[in-house]
Image 1 (tube, rainbow, N blue to C red):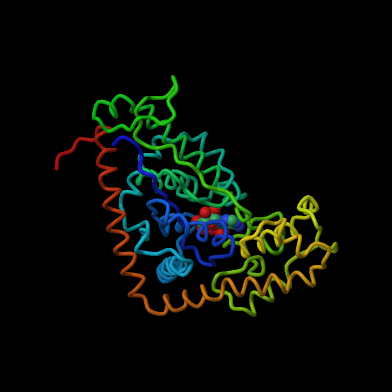
Image 2: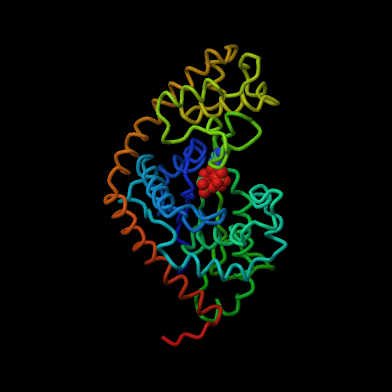
Length: 359
Ligand code: AQP
């Protein structure tokens, strides 16, 4: 290999309540990438058990629902590999190896663990703590070069780069000796001239990298928020969307005419950002239309836009999940294609580390 093949990897957890933030921050942004490079989209079911085991019916249902959302949003199984993580064993194997590469201090700094474990840190699963190592394994089992995600995943992607760097550095000699390296695209005296894992580039840009809760503009819209009014679910019908937008928290001021006027107004900023992302406009463009207007005028326009954009997707998700065979066939085909990439990568990793091969 003379250079890393441009390859996208990303995923969503099947933990239920797939919401507008997952769609605008991640899935919708994957669609155009399918025509630019090789794309792999995973339903990360091994991650979905880190905060507790759902019932098997819930886990299976949510796995199919996320797959349906991918397809309904425009991910084409003919162009992209779509599969669920547990079906490709290499994720778990590489995650174990990365548990031994990553340092406790690195993981102790992860803010998402602190947020998710809260005050109950001692009772959190080891899996929740080591989650970023599994995420690094998801990406690097395919030697993926690009990862499009929402802003909340930035820190985990930095950790993925740290793990890749340490592995490349610690095993530099073996990588070279076995002829498994790729010329380092960013050579410097401190790093080896041949590396095995790429330093994956995060793709975090656009108006919707962090969609906030409809009830609190300072908190991320999240599947696990106990208030259903805090998020627009991809399965919500038109009435539910209209109700949630109407009840969305705002302030008493009219919308400003300039983006600067959204500073210190998190709820207004969030609703304008959602409108912009759904309409494919910038916040400036939205404010040039709605600046000076009250929320009583803006909110109905926002809910109409959300219904127009989301309802064809919701209908397609319902059609796909009503009958499981189509989705299961797509996941099976995807798992075979994903394994065909990850198996040889792990074979090389085992050789680099020095596990004795006896069969
Ligand atoms: N609010 C958000 N705004 C923009 N992007 C978001 N993402 C999640 N929330 C927002 C992006 O969606 C992708 C999949 O996320 P995930 O389900 O794998 O994990 P998460 O980030 O933990 O999602 P949630 O909804 O916040 O779930 P819980 O409540 O379980 O923690 C990622 O690309 C993420 O950036």
